[in-house]
Length: 292
Picture (cartoon, rainbow, N blue to C red):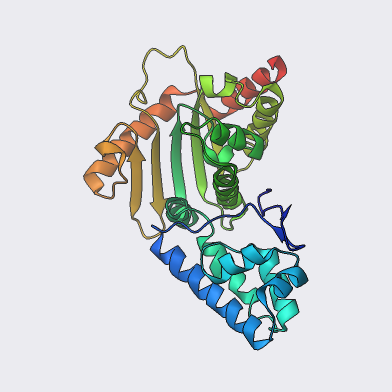
């Protein structure tokens, strides 16, 4: 399935998507999808349609209809649009797309995306792979597919869609200030193969031209390195508050305490100072692209 899902033929003449099942531990998500399912069922029964006939009319299998109505499957936007047309809901079912969109991705990703949407400044250091906000779909898919224990295909599609949705941060106005530091090795490791790596390097060069974005490279040859404990992220908000996280500090948990944040900010500042300046970094990435 693509980012929005791709149907596969099912019995009964309809099409069913591989689907994103509702996470039972995601209480807000469960509540929203259950409410949406009840509304669809109520509209279908009011129209006097059986589930099989309704599924055939909107191009989906009867089994998927029951799963959506039972709150066990997250409907994709096309399902809601077609249901609205067939049931004559006058936009009331289609309007639920906004509610569904807010819970279609894993809870942890939604919480992260909300913080990123609020941030006016972000300092980000990545040492194992390209930062998620900078990844191309192909690069991100390759990372998710090599995960162990392995994700199912459905899980790959769901987390991939969630990661790509986070990149709307580059379209925000006013734009936040984004500072990335990438380890040199992350730019050389051919995740997904040479073609995927080339497109990823091209993407870095594109994003690096944005006026609100700085991308720096930490050379492998550096003797002094403040990021040896792992990745670091510091997000600052308009009201003066902030949140930070580091793989090697405070058990990897998000921190809000000013004293702990100062430690992470100090570490971020040292990492930026030790990395190549932004202009030299883009020239370095361009050189790597030419060698790849």
